[in-house]
Image (cartoon, rainbow, N blue to C red):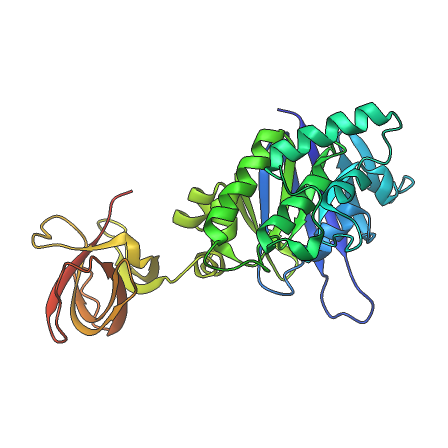
Length: 339
């Protein structure tokens, strides 16, 4: 599969900064894929987005778009308008004095034949579900509708790929789930690749085919949402995507080799209560908290006895069905689910 985007060893150091904003970051975006750049504030994700868009120049590295070098230290930089990239801004940046139709037509100004512009306008309005809204102004639209207009404008000129900066941050939390699904469906149907910047890991897990996790300007992990979530390669990545338990244990290295004390990280959803722990690594704990979370109860256990014979007391969270009635002080045995 060909690459819409290749970023290699990008480094960016801002004046008077103690550390690089980006430190030799490399990613690639395949045709038709959606990638999410995920990280906390200051991780470098927005800086990388601006460099790809041509709004910021790196200090070293390479940016290649659809096989053409857009930036390198040895070649001339391609201007943002020459990179054929669609951009959906965080606040959507719709023109308030233009209707939906004319906002989208603005993205088609390079198509000189009027009949071609009208045909493309019809296609993109149908794709984004904006029928019957084309004569409205932005202030007459909901947040989700405004997002679709911004997406339509970005997709209209058939770019190499689109960049989306925190596309869900201004949306009503109640409608976020359905709007995530809508955006993914539209982008996939268009066939255009997309790079999304977000600090919300739920957005990233729901929309992206590939996640790229950034921390302090460095790439921590790249992989599918399932891979990054269930098989995080660092404690930072594991914690970024939700609560994790740090459980002390012993590594048994075999006959004659000394055992080693270590910690394992396990998500609450990866633990289950068992009545028969025979043959499984398990933990015995006492219920010290039981909090209702809607679809599940989050139960906190105080543990000190396990098959690893660890004597240290630790607190472990597990998620259980609301139907399971646990009382404070109950003793339960939990084991890790096999995935």
